[in-house]
Image 1 (cartoon, rainbow, N blue to C red):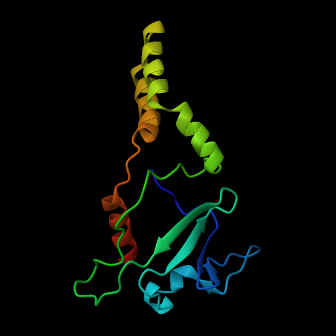
Image 2 (cartoon, rainbow, N blue to C red):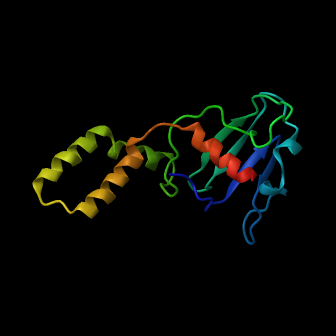
Image 3 (tube, rainbow, N blue to C red):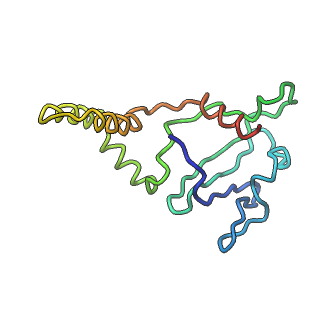
Amino acid sequence: MGWADEHLHTFSILGRRYGDAQEGVLQFCTVASELPLTALHLREHEGFVYVYDFNAWWRHEIRMERRMLRQQPGLLPRCVAGCGPCPPEDIGGIERYLEARDEHSEYEFVDWIESLREGPIVLEDLRDEVDRWLIWLDRRFDRRIVNGRLRELEA
């Protein structure tokens, strides 16, 4: 799972807003993708806010942990911690996400497994349904995946 950058987003850093300039919508002082992180001159432990999807308002707080001389190319920036999986792209905000997560709990999964006894099983349908369940049952945060995506962006 992950987000495909389909929605408007903004970074609020030191009192200024950065985002993508799109015709007919909000305009920002600087296009975020054209500004390197080093240009912001953030101090250690100073943070900023990233909001993705203005309708759902996914708010992330990001903090500069440490500034260091770049000794090996391709290693920075990197994620050092996080919590929980990425919500689906168009789930509709935190309330809908929490409802959907409850609907796809481990207990509901066991009930679904029990329901398979009630009729014939079509293997292809079963695979699709299992894939949908796995999205919700895996609640880990994997910073290796995040850091892999950061390296892709840097390349």
